[in-house]
Image 1 (tube, helix red, strand yellow):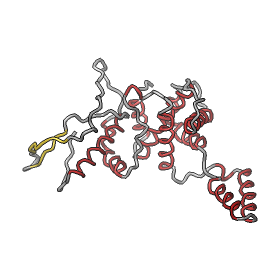
Image 2: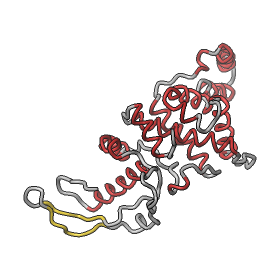
Image 3: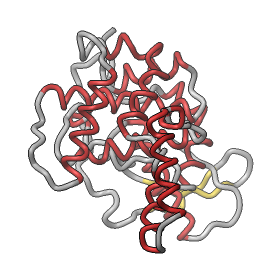
Image 4: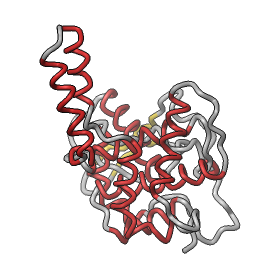
Length: 276
């Protein structure tokens, strides 16, 4: 992997660039433990001639155990195909620089790509919310067209307008959040948007795709963990629901970066090692 940087650079720029590049590779391989090995610095002289002037090392950043290749595997899975990925590298790097790529939910290594735990649940839920508001910035909650919510809004406004300051403030806070879509609603909407593309993949996990039930399981598990409850057990329903949301999150991210439907599906099949 070779990058050419034009102009004068300093150590801070180079450090930031290497860190961003590590994030880029982590995203491509859908895991945290990616390493570069030896990072060489070269200076160009003449046309396409480079002189090796040294190596670059950041203490504490490149010291994790690297992933060992599967020697007996003819086709290595677990990453976005390079011939698809490299075309969008510029756009993805720009997103990383602007803190517009959520990678905190990526598993530590390849074997944990399908592993769901109390620790991973809130990360995956946060990753979904991050992607949802970027892919659907103008989404309007179904509550806006719900007669019950409209009536409740009218009642709260009456109380606000006829109450003293402290009560009016409570009403104002309620009105500010009244029509915010719930996590369950957003998940159902996103599942609907990608069902045409991912339905056959989901059916590898669930016999029948019940979007409302999956969204409920995801919401309930996230709420239990976030509010300090340990009543959520990682049973097959929770594990499968969060596995599906990981697939959906990756599809949403790739869609945001301009991947075609065919490229999204191929990438998901490769990353999650799904046989269709």
